[in-house]
Image (tube, rainbow, N blue to C red; front, side, top):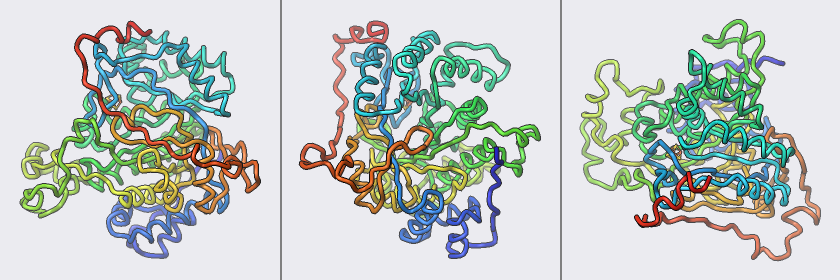
Length: 493
Ligand code: SF4
């Protein structure tokens, strides 16, 4: 295996140096975190987009842009965590708590296979009622019934809770994770999705991800998956209470651990053995999306700028609290001199205002991810939350992949509107953006290229009224007390 050697950094150059951006686009220079932050903050939108598009074309060419046909399956909504941005989770005794029957999961996969699907993305809440055997049996059942379907399942927070629930042998978290993951891999798990990444900076994570694993545990889980030869993805959910520096710090951590996975010789904490024999698994993709607020506790927090006092804070007048606090090393700025509580006293609005990303904030962030994550192959467009046409524009801002045909979605649609697109619409969006649509599999190998012939999924459509993007929007229903227990986890297993 070829060891990846990252391009050199040029910390003496400013982020708006055209020579630097051209070199990054060509894969001949790596942005420092400081340059990344400056680019995110100050580069004109079109400049950021132009550079990200050039980088994408260097890696993926000028012609093909991809999508995958898979199905989201959320096997349970019972969860021990209480993330403030989540409208999906339920307590086990809530009237609408559920765990899908295994046959229901098999039926969903059969529907996927019937439309040419190749993969399931299966994630749940973190449900203590389900033993390891339930997962092993489910994965074995999927493998025996659908040997051609790739199982992309269980995010790092779920694995960390598996360690809590199953109490596996091992002296370290890494050893315990490996014990669990080997058993799930042997039963049929193919790769691990990057759910639960949110924002890695501790002061942000502890405010929004209540009960969810920290960044070190998240990254360690993915490292174990990589050492077992699995591909994974990394994600980031932004536009809530974090500062822009927290986004760059998040990407920086992903980049460093990807260097480690790829066995980069310059990695300081990699062992000599790791450098000589790098693990084959690594992050295949990075996907970021803006926070969706509806039906979530965090969504009830006022927008930044909605109150006069936002512009009367002492010190950094009119600046978003997340930006005042955020440091590129993931800590609270000034933490060495002040305690966290003291800093928060000085910036009392931290966590009490949300930024709420616009389409341009999303495009800027995605473009930076393409430029900053020079060691990650795929950048996915997030049309599920931003809408199909912003997703289409995202292909000019560094995204090479339009993600999946959306048959169902439960998690994000619980927190607001999401969009469901079929294959014809996805292909049309890609073609109208100036590219040739191509179906890929989970390892980003091309399965089919849809050249401009009459049998292409989009060009074969005579009546688009049956193919328009559907908007999904779930209102959180009131919880009638009397209905509790009937639909609990135990009753539906
Ligand atoms: S985001 Fe995931 S981990 Fe957090 S409460 Fe919701 S289901 Fe649980």
